[in-house]
Length: 310
Image 1 (cartoon, helix red, strand yellow):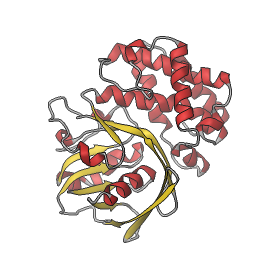
Image 2: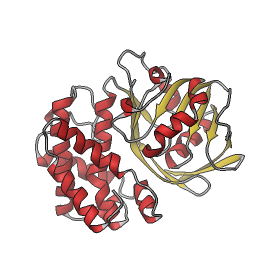
Image 3: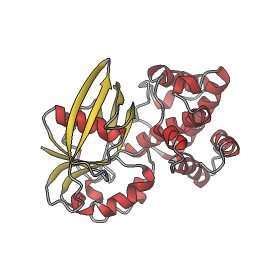
Image 4: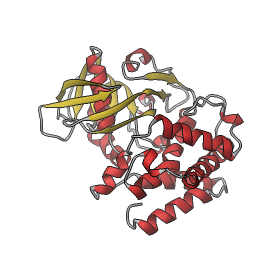
């Protein structure tokens, strides 16, 4: 079993380290010039270390059973084009961005191989230093095209965390992006973790209002029977602000120390993914004549306080 991982940030580092330590052959494809990338993972009080080959060859002729694309959303289309030879030689392609419009990407001849992954666990840091990984989460994946076969390598990915296969990946990805949209603006405002950023009942209520509005929108668009919420609640029963507050509190309690990677991008004055977190959901609402008022307000306040980052 040979696995390629394109992108060497925190999430790519977690997948690479866990998969290689489980005995699979893993190749990194990174723009870094190092021949190897060292992954140091802190998880559940223990430190693990893996030294992983960095191929650096965009034109590799190796055959890969799985290729995981772990780059930022704004680099995804460019990555698909630059690494097309590797994707051509892959049996399954797993993009792991928090993004609801994978079907709008030009996958060239490889769309039938694409199985987007919604990550419901926390990780921050970067290879060559220290990645903090919260292993009590899970991932969901399903085919981009309904006609595709069921992903057959669930057991391999379970080397990383619990895995659910869904036939409703578009909705599952929407939920992942919505959780981010509900929380991330507070983290950016304070440049801090979930628990430090959302530390008053008023902020919890604001985050919960965004989440509930998104759920109301989603119920108009997607079939609702097969989605997994952060607390495994049935989404059809989520109708009140009290339900939504419970979910936000559960996320904060479960991952109190997680600092979204976008916070580090803001600190370093790098490009951020906020456009994809905010505008895709707001645009989806507009297409259904559904006004995402709370999310639009959060975006406007962030633009006012930190101009130029959205």
